[in-house]
Length: 221
Image (cartoon, rainbow, N blue to C red; front, side):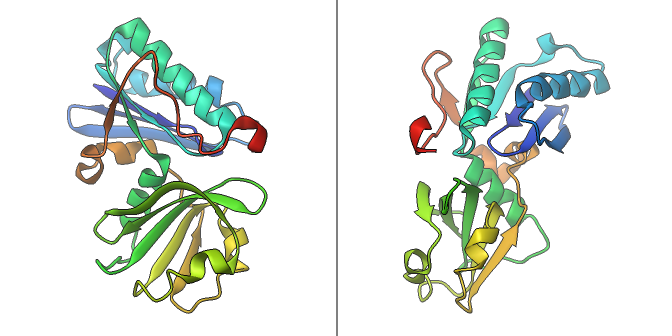
């Protein structure tokens, strides 16, 4: 049995895989109560399986980038559970999870398209990773300014560009290029870590020393 969670955005997403089946709870929280919610959701998912926390054999955590507080919640929860249960932790970029969620939607992404996954970085910036239609990273985990000049160089390199994620509406005002489509409210969901496309990107983490992907320090947020 494996548990996964991501708290890098207002969405608190927790998933459990048992016997090849995946169950999940995804809820947008407006009061920054992720620290309580993540354990509550884990307990609910275990109850649905008539299981206990001792049945969990590994943990996958979304590493961000994203909300500083949210990233600390996820890291602390993962470390605490892994230490208590003596089980391994694996990490995955939250932006990779957004890409996976979007490409599993009804929109058909061609191999020569570009998907830019974004999470709000406040002010006029987003955290972004860009992936080809095949899933190869073009760049990862950057703080990118929401202005036309930053994005224009990509216009002629790809047939279609999808800018997707959380907090991307501020980009819609500046991205007026004909081949760019902005799609809001695509969240990193924990259940995506159990897809075959994502498993190869899971990174074993050192329980004591791993850190989330902050990109910017706390004072810069």
